[in-house]
Image (cartoon, rainbow, N blue to C red):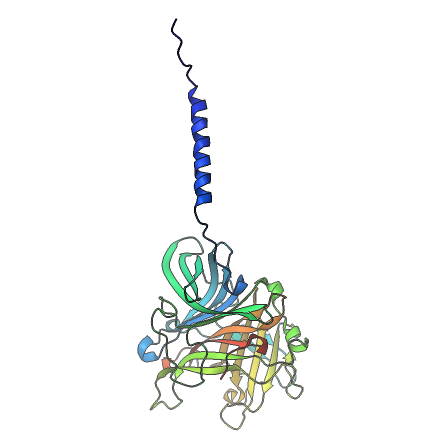
Length: 386
């Protein structure tokens, strides 16, 4: 009688092999060095960011654009963005957001902004981020918000952390801060981005980006944390070199944003409109031309999230009428809020199209446009001002 070794059923043999493979894979995983996820930029997840392609007209052919939106960084190294974008070639004109019936010397006029800013963001991106060898933040966008492939597009930011007692961090492009005046050097291609953006600034914290984190107009005018301090920053803008048509050229310049005034100035008070969503102020003694040096300023909350819009114009340009409805300065902005939910200022953009005063439509005077990005923040965020 022959005695042979009994055969194992096939399914038992497969199970033994599968278990062995799991053990081998686990051992290899333990043996490989782990790749740590990148640290959040400045330790912050949620950001408000302003970016622009700002170039002299001879270089850009009046094809500048600005973008304003939110960046979110996750602990696994992924990034997402949602934004509004305006292109100079589209010649966007001002649209009314709401009526500022503030009373007093403030004229009852529409507060205007750029088209689309009262609605949902018009673009979205997804990608990854890491830190470069020299400590900069490198962001790569390679998908749209719907998952379609795009780019890849790269951004390289300088990060400053520890602002507002650690509650805020900042990112800036090369050359965003610097001396005021004309002739700002535009960074070389690739120094900031490889898709044409030349200047940008953003602020991040771990506060929500939702409307619940936004400071109200009433708080900005009455809360002692906000109303007694000026908000200042840098404004990098593509514009005309002068007001003289015979000699002017298109340049990139750097100016100051904000000023020494506060919303609590008892001599020149801001006034809250009846809805509580906006405020107005007639600012005396500005650089406006003519005998009337007053400038009319408005701030307004619009839409959801951290949105605020600013508009201002010289009262002399209204030519005796209560409102100047043509070439005002419309500035969409997003609020900077620290980890504790305290308001610290804004980042914003300007997309100024020169229009004909008889029709309100673009008049083809491209060189008279203003296309810029700026921050306007409290001293706690240490804007680098000259």
